[in-house]
Length: 129
Image (cartoon, rainbow, N blue to C red):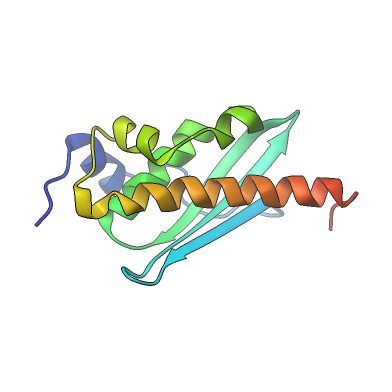
């Protein structure tokens, strides 16, 4: 059984920013067929900053903790800064993840990036729904 840091346990037991954003500016969804984790990130953008970030995650404790940490790291950041959140920086903020759970930090960073890219492509497309 993997051993988790207190930080991971805190974010798992009390995840931040859980839920969906109504009419989000961007949505990013990723999944890992091997472990069955699914993450969906929702973003609201204002003045090139992530005004709000929420997530829905179906998965293990590490996946939930990662989603919670990624949402906290991204909220209030510029899009450029948020896109630079890496799996390693997420794992470091969580004070480490067991090796067999490190893939969860990849998913969190990917889902956030997808949500931002979704927003940027909608913006480029010239209009909101």
